[in-house]
Length: 210
Image 1 (cartoon, one colour):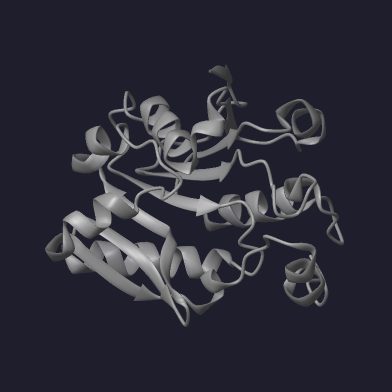
Image 2: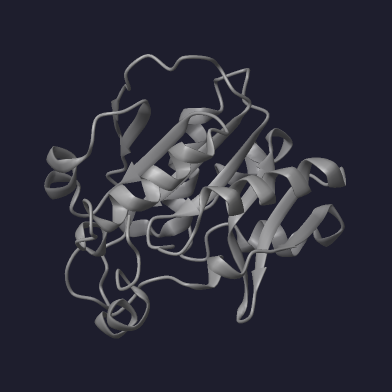
């Protein structure tokens, strides 16, 4: 795994955002991270949302297509990790990100965001974190019409178990194993992601003036 350190971050903050962008976009057939938005790419857009939330340092995990994505990434105060074992699944990429974040003692929790969650807003990320912190729970997931999942938040106490993940299910096995530790927060925007060209035509950059 290669690490590309960011420019100096102005002040340490307690929540790390882990933006997962390592997938191969197999159902689309080309890198969805590079789909064009009004300004920049889909990955640029979601990265901008994470930065705008100002919750803490942002880490972007790349894998497939990293060589194509890296040269076009905007400058900014964020970290980029290239996870060479990305093909092992989302859980493996998540685990790689947690291993990079864990040594930072100021980080008390991590928020997981997916790079194709095109409708997310910085307000939604702040809403999720505020609800999580007020609840006293140690993990939180977004709930939407079709189910639940990222953006999600995990307290540092779960970091060791998160580093053991390897499947395409991401953190779902950990969430299922600890229902009493879990907070479910309604974040309707989290339902909208991009897996196919049909998704992009129906839900993608149309109407998103960024």
